[in-house]
Length: 81
Image (tube, rainbow, N blue to C red; front, side):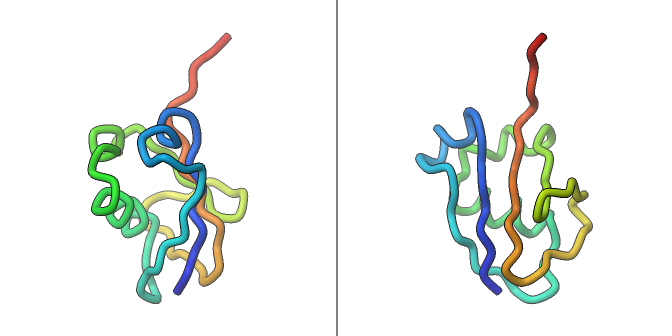
């Protein structure tokens, strides 16, 4: 299945783009998305434990099953005041 992955903040700088298309097996999970991103962009691996995922605008955990055509967003930690 094909999905669109959006990235933000310093992750966008690390991969050189704000979005990419990924091809995943049916039944893939949020964890599979992160693993595939790490294989393509190893520099994000050190940030993995802090990353949050959303699917079609709703936060998900790494065990959530990804739907075909989904838009996945990967958010790094945010700080501010």
